[in-house]
Image (cartoon, rainbow, N blue to C red; front, side, top):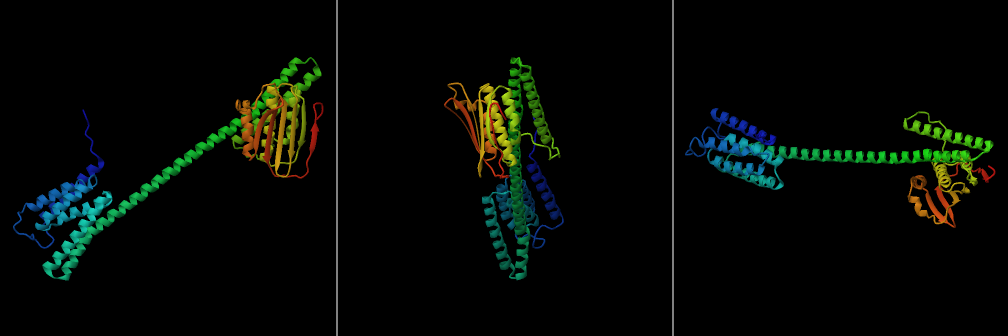
Length: 402
């Protein structure tokens, strides 16, 4: 069984039309049919004509919001008949509501047609009043009636329409703003996830790779002193990894302890070098160690950490050379190590390590390049920076010294 549904706007229009019809009948019963006295202008009009005119006007009025063009055209036709039958107050009141509805719901073409019709009605009413009575007071009364029953509803409907347009525009703007905020939030979350992924890769992958190589070296050696040294280095690397993980967890949990020491700093490069040596890779480092801006300090440390990790993983026990220099405007980092024949820089896109290094460099406005020349893998980074301390500490370490 199909359930019959009626559009709410249609239902409302029918209720309004019925209400106006009942009001018109009440006016007829109360002997308030005509504007000018108790008799129609044309006495030969049958008594039932005003009732039919009112019924037709209300029938067209029931289309006031769904089809305002038909409602206007139908009511204008009824108004012509009513002009010779009265004119009656009830039909004019119905037309007043139709004028309001056209001004609010009608198309631009329908509103222009209504404006033209209203000007014509006003002109005919004024001309008839002046010609029929010759009294300016009657003409003034007619114009007041036209203003009250036609001009005022049209102006009110137009104002409501403009308010609705402004409200719709504001609603659309608010929705667009909300959607933009959601997209920005999603982009920020995605960016934060990528940042977390890079940080976790730097902390976990770097330290665990070093620990794996160091423990492998400890298992291969028979010298107890060497094994003890390697195990101490493994412990130090584990403590460093736990410290960095704790710092990251405190940051993510919103800790108020802003004075906790940073573990990713150039001042701790010696630990990276010791870990690489413990894994069996000789390291030669020439490092200019000024006091850097925090962001640049962290980025430089992470780049060198990842470069050492890559060297110890992909070229075990190969010599690593680290050169860090700074001038007035930039910090340059170069990390090189020998690689097997046939290795090309195309492998830089194969994993997360070099991608993360490039992201670290770009995060502070720098650049990072990876190349292979004469059998050596070279990571070169240039980071713009500001010298915070003009006193530079230049240290040179070799395979056998620190």
